[in-house]
Length: 299
Image 1 (cartoon, rainbow, N blue to C red):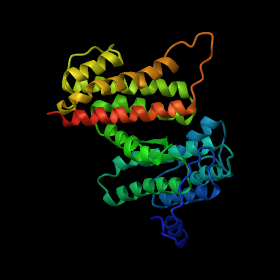
Image 2: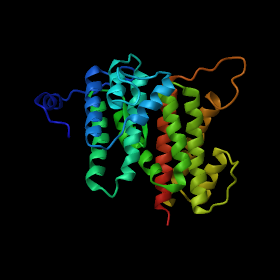
Image 3: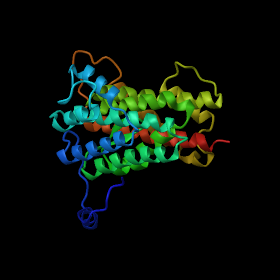
Image 4: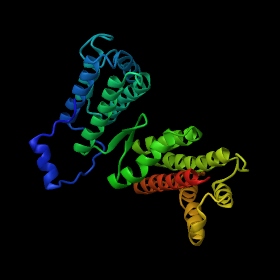
């Protein structure tokens, strides 16, 4: 069932009400809407919540999440818990797990067009409702990705996630970049910087591997950047900009990671701020997208 274009919804659009994202509060109305989506999936026979219920009970150390006995009315139990919990991260756990299972079923149902369309519609509906309630996450590639800026997310983060997911050479890059997002969502900012740098280096290694350029697996970011420039990964018409671009690439993600997250901190405890991690995450996305698109343009 698509989101109905109610009068009140149209008026909010007409007034141009801006979305201010929140990250640690999940409104009760949104929780009820997601529960309806889950019930529709169960009614369609598309998603079985038994394994999801068992997994969550085991990880949280409960016998059951709701009022039902384990294994009976699993969907109801999961979403009773979803609606009642005061821990927003548990809500995000359930959202991610349920829709990851749903996304996995997309592959299973590719030969059944009607069901495949229903599954994709439900994922799209979740993302629309997250945005409508100003909940700063989007479900993408099996993960809940935190959104800080809608423009940066739609123009940079989302395109690179799609590109990485659809290129076999970039599987490792995709895993590392998603890990960076996961660390960021859980406020593990040092770990976020480390995974950003790893994904940046891994993309260059993947391009070298794909193009059969000479490199060593132990090469640092600086050496990999040099290899990419020597093999004209950057278009020749950008010759005048190469010097400054190379400086940006070399002094961006790797330097932040080295100074803030990648080495021993010594006697003084180093705190990585949220805004620095956010900058590094988006800088990484921009670098990955730029280099990947350059690779696609090579003959």
